[in-house]
Image 1: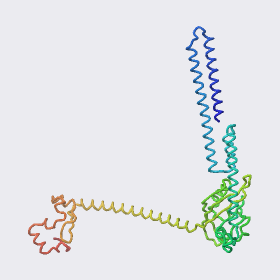
Image 2 (image 1 turned 90 degrees about the vertical axis):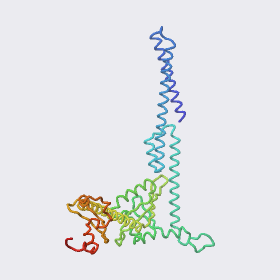
Image 3 (image 1 turned 45 degrees about the vertical axis):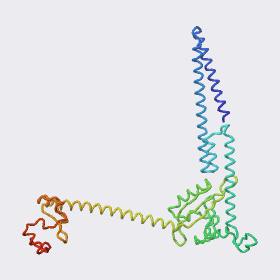
Image 4 (image 1 turned 180 degrees about the horizontal axis):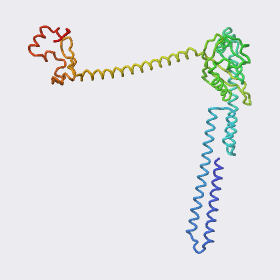
Length: 359
């Protein structure tokens, strides 16, 4: 790449020198008597400007090419599928300097597919290991951990057209059916009708990309019960990159999903209750303000006394009419407003204020 840059820069400098020479010759032919060092200086400046412009343009094109290459390599890292390399060829033509890069990318893709196939094959061997397989002479009757765990795993193998090929006994027991009931049927027939479209798109993406994880969907069992399954999918490929089958590992997450749904429902109910409570409080506040306004500005003198005959409430009309400040009466005895004769009567029988009638 650097050699190409230097070559293009050399071409630019050569072109600039030729342009400067032609310019100087033109000036001399046009006015031989006026041709001097100034003309040569102008020609030299023009040549340098052309050379700098050529170098800048060369640098810009190279940086743009490298940026596109980096972007496409990043996309391949996220999605290392064979069609991704073809997309790279279409969007980034095979420049001579990039041929080694393309070759290394092709080798990397092949290595990735080979490693993925080996992982799938190893998993199949572990899952299909006999329950009584032996680890060593000291544990002849003890199954390997992989064999023991495989009996509890719900695993299925699907064809590229998403039809059933195989299923482990735990999965068949969970679905309450036999393998003959599933073989050659579409896996999507198992899914809830509302989840079929999204599940189909996700599995097609797994065929293209090589894997997919944490796919959650609903199924309806033979007993009519709705359950939730979460699955991780891995695609097995041939040496040519063609999909052979999908390996699906299932987990029953019905209890977790229902708990989350109940939590969301309770949260929504709590939010609605809080909203109603806020509205009730706002209504009470408005009512309180209306009552306070009516109490304070009523055309009559309102006041309230506690059990000991002390003021605990006074309206503005009373204070304004009698000329007292609120601090002068609040917490004080009612007798402060009475004449001496009235105070004497009140002291003798304070219960008079608690009886109906006029006082």
